[in-house]
Structures are given as structure tokens and as C-alpha cells.
Length: 469
Image 1 (spheres, one colour):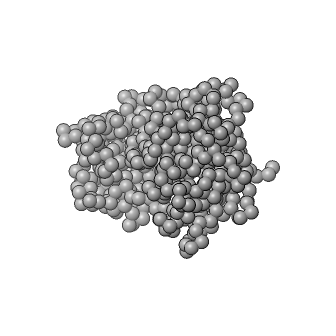
Image 2 (image 1 turned 30 degrees about the vertical axis):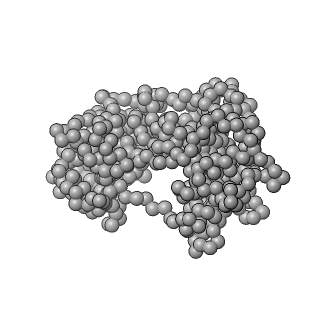
Image 3 (image 1 turned 45 degrees about the vertical axis):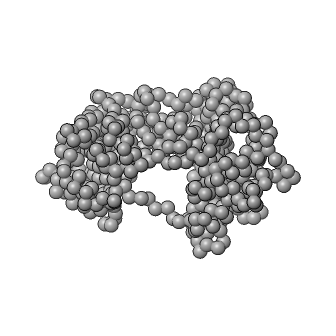
């Protein structure tokens, strides 16, 4: 069988088709119950009921922005894209940001395609990344050798050496994993994912509304600016996304743009003009580095845990670098098997100052009294979840996650959320790390001990000593 280079994207977001949702399994360096997100100010322009009149010349494509320069603002990006769309396509909603405001310009719009539902989602995004071998990161190969069911990806090299990938996918309700809020929020993609309940739905076991979702995407990848020591890679993406509430509507559906037409749009010179403007404005693309969740040294978190932990525990190791910040990992053994304990600290959420204290903790943590199962196959089980507010407005939550139907992994998490927005989690996994299987059914720390640990004043003192301000 000839290998098919096919991406395995996360379940797409209806509101921002080119951005994937978060994975469903708890992240190794973050406890799964904590709702954390930072609002991204992305809205640059909104238009309604805009009748698109394209300009398909013999050379194709839109003319450069006024003055011969690349489009820089959100409205200019919208104009550049809509000038390339089929005649008569009615755009009903649009959002964009140009190079003047972000290193990753984008256009998102919704269009009326005459099919019942919320319309056709359409998105174009431009990004630059730091990489030593852009070809190794381009195309579909990085996602696996064979396509998943319902997906296809073909890659071709163009005359100029750039790589063009054509992607299609289809999901039905049965195929989907529960999504986070990014996939269900009606904010036009202007906010980051913020979970309120597991899977992002209001009721346990609720599936996404669409019966079928289909997507089409073209990706053009090429080396970055030749003037840079490390040019990196340029990636231009153009996506269509359609939800269908009735499977019959999805059968035989043809989007207003074919993959070939989409490929023509993404190859328009105007987008390379934008890339050159990005190079000029922002310089060489930098390697992405994850920002620490707080300025508290990993060693200080480990030392504080050791000082507070009950006697009789053997505490060894640290999974983070000695100079790490905000997070640490330890092995804890009470004689019945060493398991991983992770401690993660978050500084106050500055973007929410003024509003944070007005929100009760149950707005940020999963609410549960007794056991609750999410999904038809028991994908996420939360049990014995308790929440308490102290006299000074501090919230404390203790939860158990798992086991899953096909996975005996279980984690126990205690978290403290201070009135100023700072917070800290202590999580115990019944395995020595996230790659290994469980070594025991229980935790070396009881829920009561975890709660006492996380409520200790020493953690609050660490935040005061290592404040970023």
C-alpha cells in the first residue's frame, strides 16, 4: 500500500476552522480539572451581509493594497481574500487581523452557501516558524504514513520548490471526542479555550450538535526570508469548514470552492507580500519557548512539598530542570509503589484583574457532587469532587479523575485559588510517569492530606517571594 501522508488534526473548531481543539487526555504538566485561559484580543473588523465580487484576472488574484504595499490591517486582509472568492458568495460574518497587529495574520469568515445550518466557515492564516530543516516539517509526513478513516492528504512539490498539501476530512457525531469550549463558544474565535465541564458541554454525555462535519484545507509551505541566518518556514493555510445537522445534507455536498481553486488562492502573490512585511516588521522568526506559569523556581516547589509532606514518605527525583520555573515533578512512595506527584503554580491572571475576584471558584473548576460520567463510553469519570471557600475568599477544590473504561489510570488533584487570581495544584498519578502504566490503585496521599498540603500558607509565601511584578 502506498503511504498516504495524512495529518491527524484535533477535532476542528467551528468558529476558527484552522485552529484545532485541545487534546482530551489530561496534559502531563497540567491538572485536568483546572479551567485556565487567557483572552486573546483578536477582533479587528466585523462585517455582515457583504456581497463578494471577485476579481479573477488572467493572472488571478487580488491587486496589492493601495500604494503597492502588502495588506497590513484586518480590513485590508479581508479585502485581499474576498476579492478572490467566487462571484455572488454572500459573506455573513468576518473577523481578521493583519501584520500591523500580529505576527500571525488571519482572516475568518462565514458565508451563506444555501444549505441549512450556520453556514460555511472559511479561514486563511499565515505563520512563520523557526526550524533548521523546513522540508522535514512540511507536508503531511509528520502526521503519519496512512490516513485515518474519513481523511485524505496529498502532497506535491511546486516548480519553485515550495510544498503544497491538499487535505480533506469528515467526522460524524460518533467519530468525535468531546470538545472543549473553544469548539462550542459562540465568540467567533476571539477567546482561548476555557473548560467549564469535561468535554465543554453543559450536560454529561452530550455530543456535538452537528451530525456530520466536513473540512477542506490547502497548505502552502516554503522557506522563510533568505536574508535571515535561520530563514525558518512560511506556512499559508486556507480552510473551509461545514457542519451539517442532517446527514442527508452532507451527502454529495460540494463547497463553493474546489481544492484546486483553494490552492490557487493560497498561491496568490499577495500572501508572500504579507510574509515579506512580517519579516521586515518582526525580524527572524524565533523558536517558540513555553512561558512559565509562574516565577517560582521548580526547586522551591519541591523543597516546600518535602517540608510539608506527611512523615513516612520517600520523596525522590525531580522531573523538571533544576532551573525550571512554575512546575516540578517528584516521585513519592509510601512503601506500596512510587508514583508521580506534580506541583504546578500559576501567577495571577493579569488580563482578568478586576473581574477575577467576582467569579466563584465553581466557575473555574468542574462542578460535581458524587460520581459523574461523561460520554457514552465513560471517557471521563470524576468522583468525590469537593469544593470549599475559606473566610478570606480562597477556594480549595479536591477531585479524583479516572479510572477510564479502557485505562486504569487515576489522578487525585487538590488545588487552591487565591483571591488575587494566583493558584496552585498538587496532582498525584497512580503511575511513575504519564508514559507508564499504573503501579497501584490508590494514592500515597489521601484526599484529606492533599487538601491540607495545598492549603498550607507556605505556598502563598512562595508567590509573594517570587512575584513577577
